[in-house]
Image (cartoon, rainbow, N blue to C red):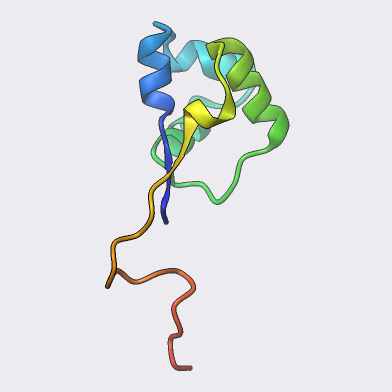
Length: 81
């Protein structure tokens, strides 16, 4: 997927620990870890808002779009089924 999560960068920039952010936004550290690694399919706007509030940033600071390289398979590719 061409969407990348820069949460680690913003945590370091603001000197905030994952445990502290998880507590602030009221999610488990495990779920925050999944979000940081990009292993989630979505994020609630209220969760995104709380992250931005604590890290004093904009959603665009956390989410980045990088186009896929030509020839790389996409989730939307025709499987021929």
